[in-house]
Image (cartoon, rainbow, N blue to C red; front, side, top):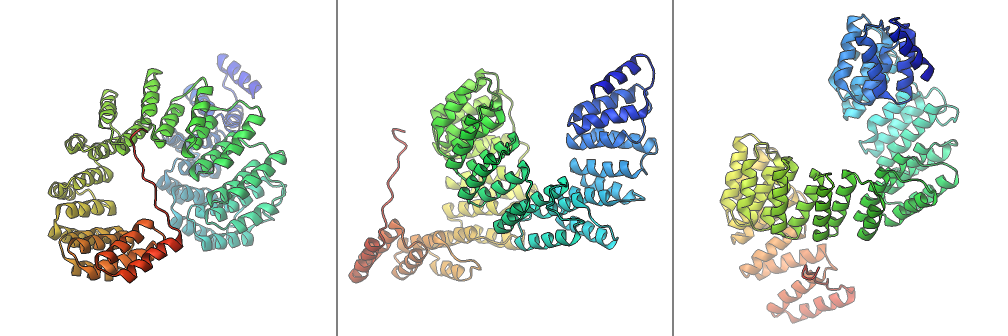
Length: 610
C-alpha cells in the first residue's frame, strides 16, 4: 500500500494523472484495512485535483462512508455517481444501499433499491441488513418474502442479515422458524470451517437463540462449530451471562483462554460490562485476573469498564485503586469514578472527585453531573444540590435529562419553588420533565397546581404517558381531589387510549379509601383486569383502619398475607388487627405462624454517622 501511495504522490507532483485503477486500488486498500478516514480524504483530494475516477473507486468510498458513518459525504458521492452515469452500475447501487443502511437512512436506502434496474443477492442482503439495523422487522419480512418470490437464493452473508433482523425481537418461536429457514436455504453446511461466512452465520444463530433464552439451542450450535473465532466464543459466553448462567459463562471463558483464543479489547469490555450489569463480581474478577496474568497494558476503555463493574458490584475500594493506578485519565474514567461513589452513597467523595475532575479541565460532563444530582436527591442534601446547580449554570449545561434530575432533587429536598423555577426556565420540555414537576408538586400536597400543570401540558399537545397519569393521580390522592381523580382515570382510558396498570388502580383505590368511599374502592378492586398487588390492598387497609371498618380490615389484611406470607411487618399488622378486635384465638394463630415461618424483622437503617 505504501508503494502505491508513493506512486500516486509522485504522479500528482509531476502533474500526471494516475490511472483510475491506481486510485481505486489505493482507496480500496485503505477501506479494507479500516483506515476509512484516509480513504475518504484521498477520494476528496483526487476529486478536487480533477483526476479522472471510474466506477471501481466509488464502492470502496461508499463503504467507508457507511462504516464511519458519514451520510452527508455519502450523499455527495451519490450525486457524483449520478453525474458520472455510475448510478446504473449494480456494484455502485449495492454500495449505496449499504451506505444508507449503515447511516440508518432507511428511506433513502429503500429508494435506491426501488430505482435499481438490476439486483443481485447482495442488493437484497443489504436492504434486509438496513431494515435490521433500523428495527423495521415487518418491512424486513416483506423484503424476504419478495426475495423468495423472485427466486433469489440467499447466500451466507444474506442469511446472516436475515438472522440479525430477528435477533433483537426476543421471540423464541420465531427464532426456531428463522433457524429452519437458514437450514432450508443454506447453499452449503453453515458450520464448515473453510468458510468465514459459515462461522459468521453460526455466530449469528447463537446470538439469535441466546437473546430469546434458548441457551440449549445456542450451545448445540456452538458445539458444532469446530473452528471457532473469538466472536463465536464471546457470543456464547455473553448468552450465558445475560440469562444468569454465570457459572457456565465462567467455565466457557476459561476454556476459551486454555484453547489459545485471545480475547479482543471489544470482547473484554463487553464481558466486563455484562458482569457489572448482572452484578457478577466473581466473573468480573476472573476477567481482571486474566488481564493481570497476561501482562498486557490495559487500555482506558477496559480500565473504565472494570471501574464501572466494581462500582456496580459494591467494591468501591477496588474502583479507587484501579483509578489511582492509571495516570492518564480521560473524562469517561472520571465520570465512572463519580458514578461508583454515588452508587455507594459516598456523597462527600463523589463531590471531591467531581471537583478534581473540574480542576483537571475534563469536565464536568453531563453524565457525571446527573450522577451527583441523583445522590443529592437520595440523601436530600440541598446545599450540595445548590452548589451543583450553580456549576451547571456556569458551564452552560442545558440537557433535558439534567434539568429533570434537578427538578427531582429540589422536590425531594423540599424546595418546590426551586423545582418550579427550573421547570419554567426550560423551553425544551419533554414528557419526563413534565412528569417530574407533577410528581414533585403532588408529593408536597399541591395537587391543584399539579393538575394545572397537567392541563397546561394537555393544551400544549405534549402527549402524556402512563407515568404522567400515575403522578397526576398521586397528586389527587394527597390533596383529596376525588372528582378530579375520577375524571383523569376516565380520560386516560377514553381520551388517550392508555390501558391502566396495577399502579393506576392502586392510586384510585388510595384516592377512594382516603375519602371514605370504601365500597367504591372494593368495587374497583373487583373490576380490575389484573391481579391486585400488596400496594392496592394496602391502600384499602389504610382506609379501613382510618374509618374503623373491621370487615374490610380483615379482608385486606388476609389478601396482603396471601401475597407476602413471610413478611414480618404484614404478619404483625394482622396480629394487631386481631388484637384490637378482641379475636384472641386468631391472634395466637397469627403469631404462631410468624414463629413457624421463621420470618425476621428487618434491621433499621440510618443516614446518621454514614
